[in-house]
Length: 150
Image (cartoon, rainbow, N blue to C red; front, side, top):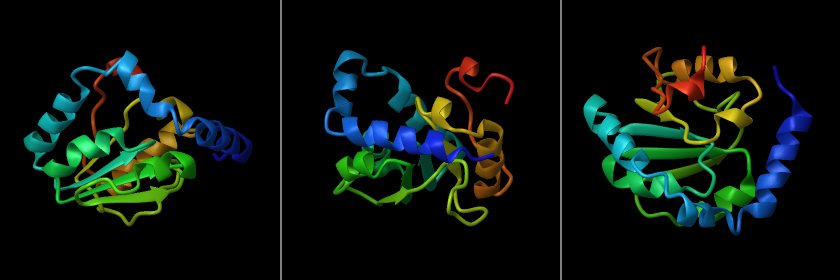
């Protein structure tokens, strides 16, 4: 269930604000998210990690020292351009979380922070995440309200 017009709008919107996007963390640093993600990586022993909707790579930078390979997937090339040059084993991929360009069982952990509402096919994303995580539990919500009935 793809909606190219929605995807193009999201892409254009985020390309246009990519230069100032990280200022949001000065206002709301989302306390506890980094600790929760690092804890989850340690808990499940994840070494291959994917962030879907990674934007400027804010969380990738924090998590890179804790994984052998960390991939940021985002629809906005403008946002990804802000993440270029992050230290560590970070790879950036421009693409849709609704149809991630990865083989099955590519990742031990897949996570999303504040981006799920932009995914056109949320159920499809969950299925793709399971596929990319080898059928294992693809992740967990830090806020149960975020996933609703998925």
